[in-house]
Image 1: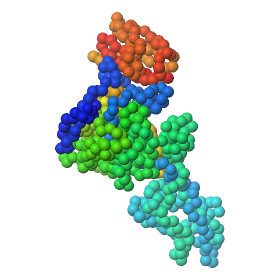
Image 2: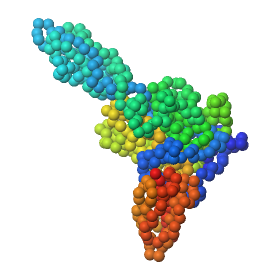
Image 3: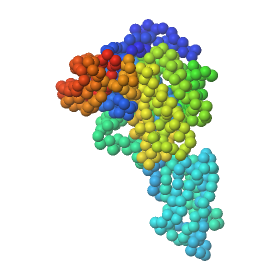
Image 4: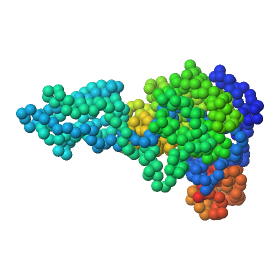
Length: 564
C-alpha cells in the first residue's frame, strides 16, 4: 500500500485546499499480494478490537510488527470535545451521592413545626443538570428538591423545631460549579447554604478507579514501577482546552485539561507497540464543532470549515518543523500514516446538518486523503456513541443515535468502496451509564475513563488493520456469483488452540483450495478439497492472527482466525 513520507529528502509539492504540502511517496509492503486484497477482520469492531489488542499489546504473542525505517510515523486525530479527551483521571461527581453537604438545627418560633424555603439558583440558567438534594431529619427524608430548568426556583419544606437536619446529595449531576442554594426561615434568615457543588469525590471508572480494579492486568501498560507510564517513542502535539500547547511524550493528563485523558492515550500505546519508528500524534480537536460548518470539507461545497483548514495548517507546521518542535525525536523525515475521526454531537443542531452528515463524512475522508497526498491513506472513524444502545428520551441524543452514528457506520463500513483502508469503531459498545461513571454528562460519555481507554485502544486496533488493508466490517467475499452460498459453511473453534475445523460446501465436481496464511502472508497450510470437512492441526503454529482462504471457480472467501 502507498504511504506518505519525506524519506531520502526527495519531495514533491501537493496542493490541498490552497495549502502547499511537501510530501514524498514511498511503498511499504507488509503482506503478500494474495491476501492484502481481501483480508477479513472480526464481524464487528468490538470483537476485532479485543483480538487485535491481544496481538498488539501482549509481547509474548507478537513483536513490533513494522521494523524501523528511520521515519516518524505521524497520525492525525481530529474531532470535537471527546477527541480532546473527557475521561476523568482522579475524581468525579458520582461519588457525591449520599454525601452530607451541611447540617443544621431548625428553630420555629412558638410552634413545633414550621415552613422553610429552599431557594435554588443556577448561574448558567439551564437548571441543575441532575443535581438533587434530600433534606433529612431524624433519619427520614422529609423533602427532595432540584431545579429542573431555568435560573431560579423555590421549594417549601416543613421541618420540626429543634431536630437536627442534614442536606444530602440524592443524585449527582453535572456542572456543579454553576449551582447554589440557601435555606431560609420565615424571617428570611439563612439557616443553611451552599455556593457551588464540589465534584471531587472518589467515583467509579475514573482512571484511578480503573487501575485499582484491574485485576486481570488489562491496562497494566499504563503504569511502570508504580508511576504513570511515559512512552519513550510516542509523542503528542495538542493545544488543549486550557490553551496549553502540549509537545511531549505521551502519558496521562493530555486530554481537554491535565485532569483528563482522551483516546490518544491507548491509541499511542497501540501504535507504539506496532511500529519501531517514533510515533507522533497530532491531535486537532476543539469542543463544540460540527462537520457541517466548522470542519466542512472543501469538496462538500460551500465555505470550507475554518477548523478543517486549521487542522491542515497545524499538521503542516508541525511536520515541516520537526527538528524544532520535537528535537528529542532526532529525525526530520516523516510519514503521514493515518487519520482518525471522533465527532458528531454538534451535527444534531439542525435537520440540515443531520441530513448531510453522511455525505459530508465521505467528502472528509476524500479531502483529507487528497490533502495528505495519499488516496489510500488509512482512516478510522469512531462513531458518536452517546447513550449507547438504549433509546434516549433526549431528542438531541436520539438524533445522534439514529442518524449521525448510522451515517458514520455507513461510511466506515463501506468495504466495497474503501477495500479495507477505512476502519470503524462502534463506540456505543463502550458507553457506560452515569451511575457507573464519574459524572452525569452523557454528551461526554459521562467522563468515563474506561470508555476513553476502550475507544482509544479500538481506534489503534482498527488503524493497524487499515494500514494493512484489513479493516473490513464484514467477511470479505470476492465472487462471480455473490448470491451463491459461501464455500465455508462452518469454521470452529475460533479462537483455536490445537485444531481448526473447516466444513466446505461446493457444487458437484467443483474443487476448492484451502489455504491458511499467517500475519506475514506466508502459506502455512494448503489443501485441495471437494465437499468435505477439513481438520487442520494448528498445535505447532505460533499464536496470533491468521487468514483462512477458500478459493474455487466462483468465489474466494476469507475469514479471520485467531490461534490462541
